Length: 400
Image: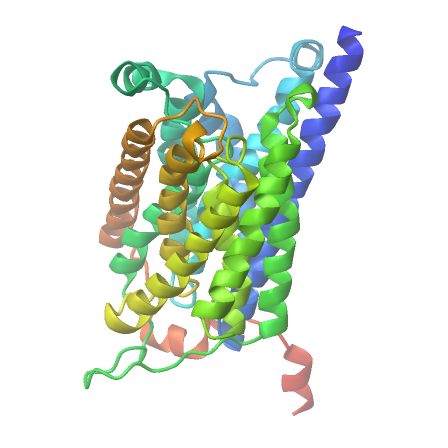
């Protein structure tokens, strides 16, 4: 029976890992559809190579930083002792690799290729797993301290803070250090539109992310006996809440409509195992509103050229999700309890602060040494031709 349980648990978390792996295709197509045509190839290549670098670094360093476990033993030992552990690594890797995929959307269209890979290695090897170990593996006694102060530990079931807020807040200093795209904001104060290259690809990316997210959230139980239908339904309700709010507040703009469900899902991750479905609906709707309002402010008024809006979507909606778990997870609002708002506030603030500091240090060091940005001529030609020497539709260019 124990062997059967281990086998089913391994299969369960493997399916989750595959679903979250598929989400990286969603990241790729969401970015591909949002950037201009001359940067589409770069979007696709970045996500795949970032994932590959993340895998090597998380296997060699990051997983050990977070969980104190390494795989530098013989394959026979791995098979006998760590069959489930290997697949758990695969599952958690897909979470870790989401961080550079998030950052990629913010710095799109003007970032150098190789320095970003070095940033990926530093973030996935050290910055992300350091906080992951605190939140999910009791490192440094931080969770015990939060519980002693507030009555409950900081709760983040599927990563509103650990993954999404950390990714979004890392992206913010990267975007600011990189600067806006050429001619995005003119000296006379006008804002030049850089419209998406493909709404269908943008929508495809959104849909792939939405479907994979049910692996992201539900399979965060990590074993079959802990699977929760409540997590699945809460994820669904938050998704539609975010969609409908973005539809209304975004005045039927397809970019907002297809980012709305992502905002809702980002926000519900932390408390998806605690909330009532109606609470999840509200959490998702608020997240949809946050994204529309803050994306508009950052792009138009504050002139922060965050191409995909990853700071509003992941940073701010993730922050809201961490706090919302302490509100809608309480028994007073129909939740299961076992969480406090003060505990969520402390954990959320710690995650955001660490991410900003880590992002500023990594990208600041790279800017001072290797540089972060393509030259003006390379940016004008587009990252596809400047970096990869080919466009998204080379056959059309030959025919002309």
